[in-house]
Length: 63
Image (cartoon, rainbow, N blue to C red; front, side):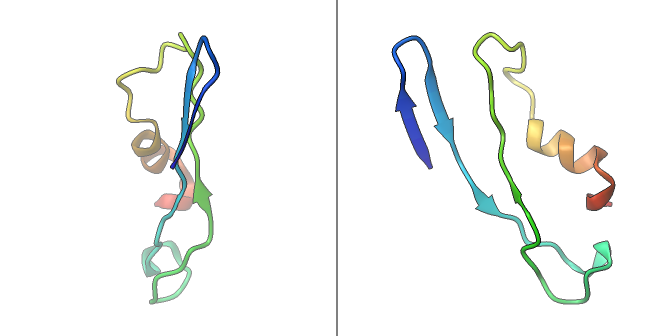
């Protein structure tokens, strides 16, 4: 996790590999095919939303 205070805003970045299973068609073992990152904008009206969960539910590569 990386954090930075830029004066007016506070930025936090977290990256973690997400293991995918065979249900996505990539085989029976866990793989790390991509990384997720979430960038939030101050006053972007996204506070309280579970952005990564919403992405996983709506993106075809997670079904």
